[in-house]
Length: 120
Image 1 (cartoon, rainbow, N blue to C red):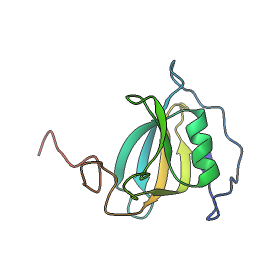
Image 2 (cartoon, helix red, strand yellow):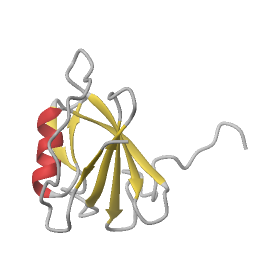
Image 3 (cartoon, one colour):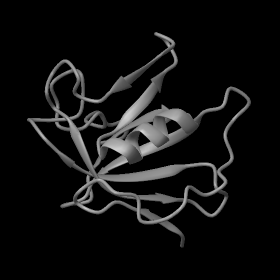
């Protein structure tokens, strides 16, 4: 498994691999709590937002609805400090392990966006 690893200072420890983006230049990014493994959210990145994430050490995404870049927590202060970024065997999905600052990742106020169940 190839890993894109970030040191605490936010420095890139490896080169950005060739990833498979969709026809709009996007790749799904699953955001996971680095401490307990909880899946916090899913959002889309493009190459530039991934580079912004690597450069700053905080998650940045591409908003499909607003058509602009956004830093997670830019208005709430609930930022996500990146610890590790992995990509899957098909090179078309990212797993971003973070330290979640603030009470949660979801815009509804929940810790995770996955707080509802289809089957109990």
